[in-house]
Amino acid sequence: MIAAQKANARTAGFVRRKAAHDARGDCVNRATDHLLSYLVDKGDGLVISGYMPIRTEIDAVPVMEALHGLGHRICVPVIVGPDLPLSFREWTPICEMVRGPFGAKVPAGGDWLAPEVLIVPLVSFDMQGYRLGYGGGYYDRSLELLRNKKPTLAVGYAYSEQAGAVPVEITDQRLNAMVTERGVSEFIV
Image 1: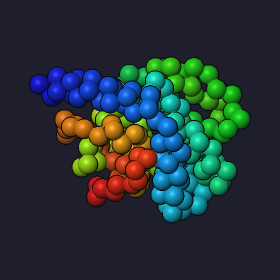
Image 2: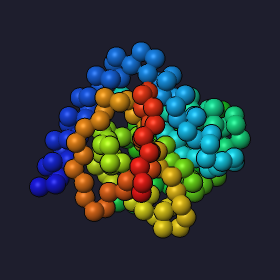
Image 3: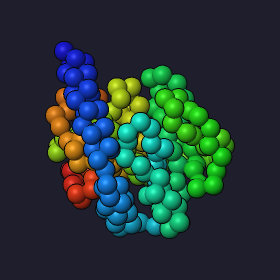
Image 4: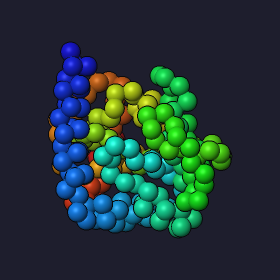
């Protein structure tokens, strides 16, 4: 039953995300400013995971470039196998990129890192800190693994129009914050 609810919510989320992406205007610039302001206060020299956008995801690359310029180590997720947590490979603005699973670009080489902060893409989110992704569970498994080792901050990044109902399972990991072009919402996790 929950799988069907998630599938329906995912379909609705994709429609909202596409509409927001098509009408984005300066949304990405405003969201970038909010995300940078939020993350700059989290410390210096952090290992931060961004992502290479696919489909109609909001573009995290401007934030990644700015954070790299501020001295943070940036990495991106790499799917290493079905039902496994993500691995995270170091990214720089000039690194060679190759096509990875699901069409996302990944670094051709570089160090494998354990992020302290993850900028997380999504299909839909709610105001309790839950997100709905593509259904593979990669981020949930990864966040559980990372959080069991050390405090790990998960920041959702999306268009505000992606807000909607998110059916929740026991394995779903909550976000610490959600950033859109309208600002930052923090959640107690």
